[in-house]
Length: 249
Image (tube, rainbow, N blue to C red; front, side, top):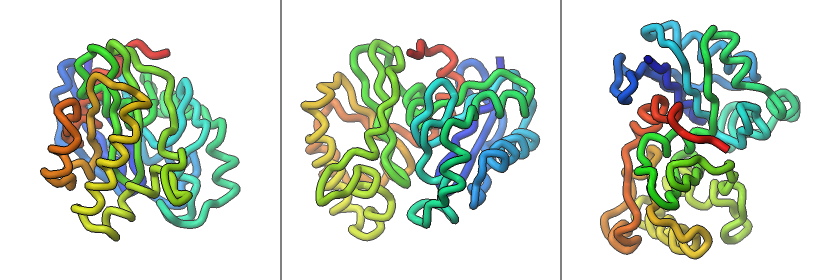
């Protein structure tokens, strides 16, 4: 069984084809996320990306936002004029909210599709399946996924919760702040977030992934403790195969 795995971010959309073991059968392809991005253009972009890769038997799509049973409740970046931190367009908010993205992509591609929050798919590629495992992805903003005994829990949009100075987690430790502060100060912020969330989740293992996890400084990582693990961003694609094995609430 081969899986087309597509990871949709605020700045780019990348995809590859995987076998059952999660091994890539094709070199990943990345295209810029087009803006403005109404749902029909989103689907067309995924179909075009898929046409440039070997044919697969099913597809996994990860995208930012609150996704329930393949339906978009809300998405942060795709409702903006030209990408993250730009003006929100009310007409795009209306088009995206309640959009059955999973069904639309499945019909356009002619294959079974699982469409989930991108952090959940990232997590599927790294979890051990034992105990309470929390996955936080550091990128344009903050992604979050929770697994209990290998079972995916209902999604929480932790990124939108207030954390300090009226800022949400998305803005407090997102890419914009990393660039403004530099890696050392930004890493200390991430460390404070980890310690603040520890008594909330009491995880057995915390995985830090996403494109910005590589910018965390060694001193910050040491302070976080042995129950915190850095995982490669490639997990966002590798999880595309493993997500079909998950039990999903």
